[in-house]
Length: 241
Image (tube, rainbow, N blue to C red; front, side, top):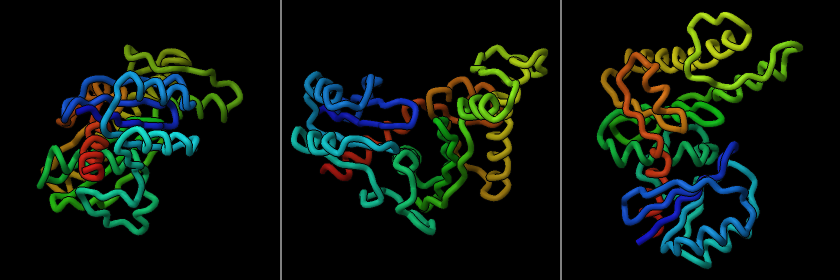
């Protein structure tokens, strides 16, 4: 049985292919036009689909997916495998819901901090009682680079290069050190502060750059670039039973 997990993010729109409960591949969609959705559905013929979206997309996509499969749209109405002890659960982003679901499914009965590296960096804390307590949101790597270029008169447009020096020797490497090393220091700082309050807990780092940043951190963590997809799959199984 195949399941397609659609993830419409701010930067990229992607879909993960699962056969039963095994992740097979990620496909980056060229756009979120109906043709692209129809094509991926035709290629894989899934029995189940789920959509997590943080962008405005054509509502016809949801209608089409519902006609062609057992479909679920991730929202605050989704049946979850955890509770949300936050003031307004309906404001929790779809991506954060999926990350929390994956943490509870794969690391049950433990305190878990899931750090998602996307357009923004999200810190998501789920305690051993499967309660999502909240966390934090900060600008992602590309957003930080872009902000320095946009909001200053002379700083250039710079992108990540993973062999940057800690001590920058020109404008480009100063900016790379400030952003990339700064993110690593930020994450280690959050992990240390959570440790003081909650003691031993799992830290899961996910997102496209998770493998690289995992090597930069001083704390022990699990790196899983497909963790959000695994959460979508778990929620699909719960809501498309």
